[in-house]
Length: 256
Image (cartoon, rainbow, N blue to C red):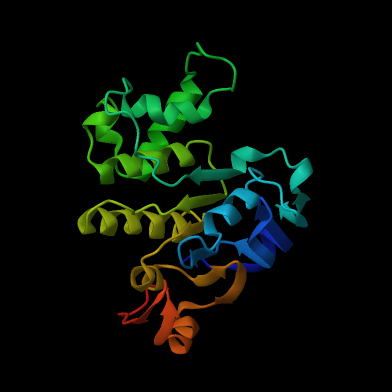
């Protein structure tokens, strides 16, 4: 079973604040993500979860504070192959998009700016490996538009895996897919974390499910309101004001 190495920080967020047009979205966030961790980020709508992701990935520049990736200041970080990202609603694309599953995965291997690239043998092997990791190799030559939402989401995980990252960020990865697909999806994530040692960070609104899956919970509501284990989180919030309403969280046994 994968163990978290608390001596190695992959992500270090220090005193980060961010605002859109003078409206504070993040305030003084400090958060470390360790090698081998599986972190669930939760919080109400508009709490700043996706913004925090984008700041950590260098897509947005914080007003204050700093971000380090693999011990290096974000401004100087170049090893982007170490990081995979599955954005929110990644499967919502043109249903007539003329690409096979293999094509979609290979897109992550192409050099930006070079339109007519031919995949190398190394690229092809990397794509096949990634598809096997998400149990979708038999769909390699199918059109991406012919797949179900759950199958498509697994393909986008494969695309994030194809450059052999050390950490993957996932923004609401199970939104809009049925329960069976969600179950299969979480099994894949557990395998990536425990067997391959990948560090995972995901945003979710499904608090009950996420507390069964992850190793640590980070609660974001403009500020970082908690960063703890699911067990401690549930102990403190059996009845809590979460997602704008009173809910009781009931969970079954924890996988980790």
